Image (cartoon, rainbow, N blue to C red; front, side, top):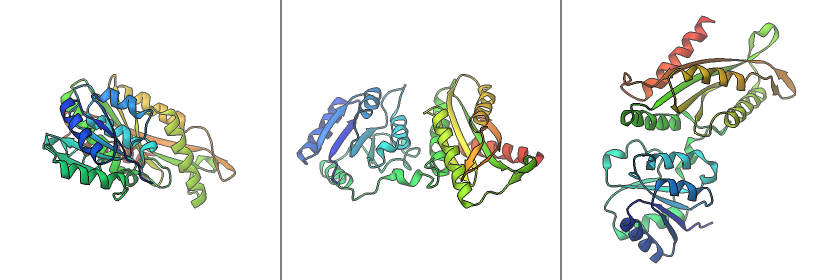
Length: 286
């Protein structure tokens, strides 16, 4: 079904009105908002078929934050996003999240043709590639993208604190020894673990399943690095109650490790690697 509702999020009124005029002449229903906060508010009450998103929307909230919110919310699974920017060096961290990236200036014919293709569903929405099919959590590819955003933000804000937590959930049998559940039990375990994590962690936390019963989470805008320990305890508490695995209840053990972002990391993936190595160290010591 055609969804020709277009939302333009652009803080330059002249550019926003230019895009609006071009797409309106092409028969699309177009509205504009002129700030990131206004864009987030508008998205709570509408599901556009296409969003034209400027990357530079101010210092407090940027286009990458809005793009993450869109890709994090299943309501927008069918929404296409075109990122439009005048700064080519800002596109690397969002190229995997956007359906298309355009560099200003954008021509009339180019914009019209691409927008029509997007809203007619000729282009599959990018978000489908970022979900784990069993749990509907994010996969590692999306997690890396979100981690890159946090890594870049920390460069701009010395007070920005973020933590990566890696953890594994093991099913316990008699005498609390780990056991291997069957396929149906594994699916039940993963689904219930995902439900609890999504319900009890913050909406801004990024949760991904990376392999089997291993998960990773990203927690941003913390008050201090010591909050990492509180997060570890919270995750263990969330998953502490027995799991109903196809009619039988089992206890689980949750083994966690964390890494706090700091300027010593050269790349964003180094933080994930550090958390994962810490987890492997804990597992090998058990």
